View 1 (cartoon, one colour):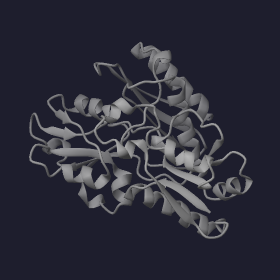
View 2 (cartoon, rainbow, N blue to C red):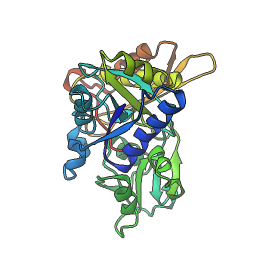
View 3 (spheres, one colour):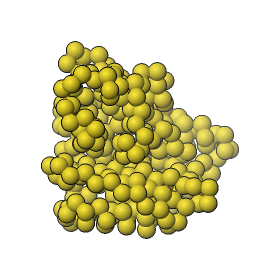
View 4 (cartoon, helix red, strand yellow):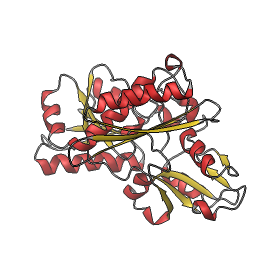
Length: 304
């Protein structure tokens, strides 16, 4: 079995986690080989991540490896995936979710001096931090996790903000100065989840993937993706969504949408048994509140 993955250390860790799960479930279908792929997002480190929105820059080449037969499965950070399905591929689901929260490396929020600088390539993170601390300044951040963490030591940067799950998976959680609850900073849809795709006509691949997916995580991520999908095609607006499932199987989701100038940020929380309906309803309500045009923009691939 061949698993296509980005070639970064974090992506490789995630692909190995899928391989380990397949072996533990007895559904590896023989030896497992990782097929590393360089994506457009890996090669272009100069373009701001917000300018690459909605293009699938961290997944397209990985998906192509499965479609053309070089690999049998694709493993992605769920938050990097486009909200619309990819023709010829099936999103089987996700492994059990890691920590979905955003985290500061360097200084905690209340330790950053007035007018301090936070490095981030994410408009979603920037607008929410600015709402908490209007005095903060921001600078861009690109590259793998080691490069991002190292940015916190630069003399002109007080902190960087990244996904807590990424730091944990790379053994760097000791660098976390502060984690934000989803109520404080709404995560990107799919954050902390590892997604698995296979060819739509691959029966064996579907069975193998189906044996290791976590149903609760998959339900939540599908609801979050429905939120993004309902927003429509080609946007750069800050947006986030995070769903959980209670003991009775009911989903609750907090979602965020900001106006283009980030002058208005709206959050809403709703619950429903049907995740797809929940995500779609939240998207429509937030668009109505912010006055955004659903036909003008779509889901964005947020940075890690």
